[in-house]
Image (cartoon, rainbow, N blue to C red; front, side):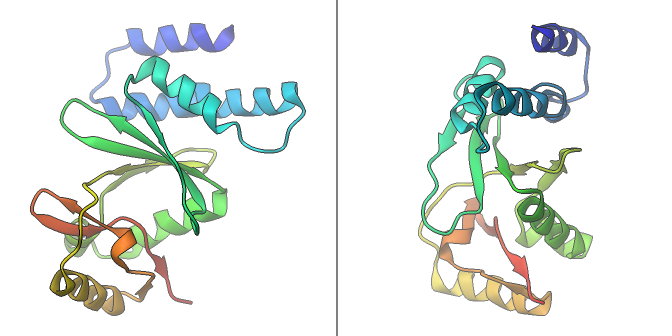
Length: 178
C-alpha cells in the first residue's frame, strides 16, 4: 500500500493550486498503478475503469467519458471548484501530438482559439486540459476557427472538436498538417 502513503503525504503538503495536485497524483500514483495492475493481471490493455476509480477517490464526481468512433485518447472529466477539466489518457504519440500542436501556436493566439492545456505528465500518457460545454457550433464561428486553423497549418477542425467556453468557441482537439 505504498501508493496510499504517497497519497496521504501528497495531500498533507500545501500546494499552490489543484492542477499541480492532479499532476502529482497522476505521476506518483496513477502511472505506477497502471504498470502494477497490468503486471498483476497479466494484461496489455490500459485498465480505464481502475483509473476512474483512483481519480474518484481523490476527486469525487470524476466521470469517464465514453469514446466514440475515431478517438485515440480516453477522457476523464474532473470537476474543479469553478472549472471543468479533462484528463486525457492515450498513447505517448497521441498526447505528444496534441501537446506540440498546442505549443506551436503563438502565445497571443493560442488561448483565444484553443482550449488551454495545463500540462503533460512525465511518462507522456496523460494531459490536463480545460473542458467546455458541448453545444451546436454556428457555421460562422466554425469558419473563423477553420481560417485560423489554416493559418497555423491545423487540420481536423470540425464541430466535434469545438466546444463553448463562456461566450467563445474554442478548439479542443486538432492536428498539424505534415
